[in-house]
Length: 478
Image (cartoon, rainbow, N blue to C red; front, side, top):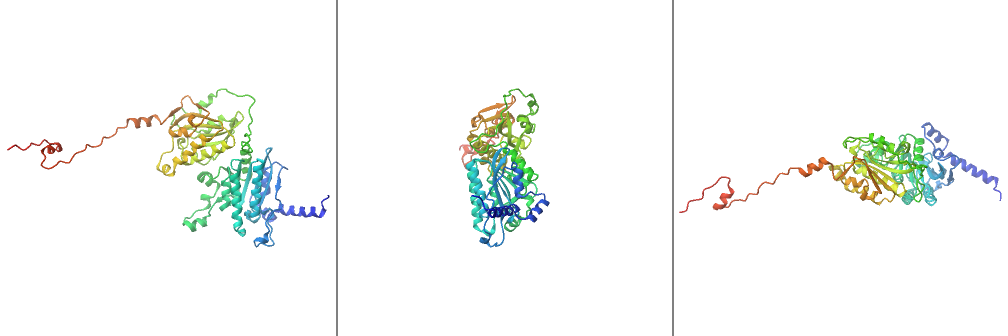
C-alpha cells in the first residue's frame, strides 16, 4: 500500500524540526564559540552514511510539566548506532541547545534503550555528555531517569566497553553516569564536571572555591583521577575514542582486535641495555622501554596525568593487543602508593574482563612509606593490586628490570601471584628489601635496658651492701 503524500510531508517536517534542535540562533551561537552541535559530534565519530538514529521524534509532552507551547526536539538527546573503523558502535549525544540538555523521563528512556540494545548486540557504547543536569520541571521523574541510566551502566560494565566524552557541563547527578563507565575523555575547554558548584560549597562549608580548582579537565586528570584522557577540543576527543576502540574488543566474549605478524621475531634487542641504568638508584623514564617494546612505539597511555609513579596503557607486541603496567622510577622512585594502586588495579581488572593479555614491567623499591599513606589505607588500596592480579585469568608476563623488593614485588605480579612467566634483566634483584636496608636491620646496635636495682630495706646489712656502690662495714659484734 502506497504511503499518502500528506503523511510523508508531515514526517519530513517533523524531521526538519528535530534536526533544527534548539533553533538556528542557538546553533549559530555554538558555532561562534567553536563548538560542534550534538549531531555534528556523532557525524564526526561515525563513518559517513552509517549512522542510524533511534527515537528521532520522541519527546516529552511539554504540557505535562507546565511548558505549553514549547518543543523539546529529541528530548535533548540523540541516540543511535553506526560504524567506527568498520565495527558497530552505539552512541548518544546530549544536545545543550534543547533545554540545556537536561535529563527528563523520555531523555533517560532513550539512553536506557540504547544501552539495552548495545548489551544485546554486543557493541561498545560512547556517550557524549553536555547537560545542565536534571530537568527540574519533571521532579522525581528526572531522578528516576538517572537511576535507570545508572542501573544499565552497571549492567553493561564488563559486558561491553563504555566510553564517556565530557564536552560541556556535567553537573550533579549527571556526573555519576560517566563515572560508572570504563574511560572518561574530557575537553580542556568549555567542559566542567562536578557534584556541587562553588555556590553550594560556599553555602554548606564556608569554603571559597572556583571551578578551575575542581571541575576542569586538568583538575580531574591530575588530582581527582576521574578523567583518563584530556582532549584539546571535541574533534580531538573523538579521535582519542576511536584510537581507544582500536585496542578493545566489542564485548567480553570476543578477542581484542589483534593483528598478528606473519612470523614471530625472537631476535635480541641490544638497544634495550642502554635504556635501563645499571645503578638501581638512578631514575629513568620507563616510557622509553615501553615504546621500544611495543610495535612501532604505538602506545596509548591511560591516566597519563594521575599517579605518575605507575604507567598503564595499551599497545601491540608482534601485532597482539596487550595491556602494559609499569613502575615509573622517575616519579617517587616507582613506589606503589594509594593512588597508583587504585590506578593499576582498575586497569588490570578491565583488561582481564575484556581478554587483553597483561605485560608487567617491574622496578619497585616497595610501597610508599609515610604516616599519610598508612592512615589513608595503603594496606587496603595496595591489596587491590594483589586481588586484581591474582584473579586475572588472561595471559600474564612479568619482566623484572632492576629491583623487586618486599610486598610490592608480589603486588607487581610475581610468579606466586599467578604470572604465567617471569623474565628478568641479568642484573635484576629480588629481595625482601635492598641490601643497605637489610644491613641496618640485621646489624643495628641495640641499647641494653638499664639494670634493675632493688630498694634496700632498713637495718638489713645484707641489703645495704648490695644496694651501695661503696663498700660498707658491718657493725661489730658485741
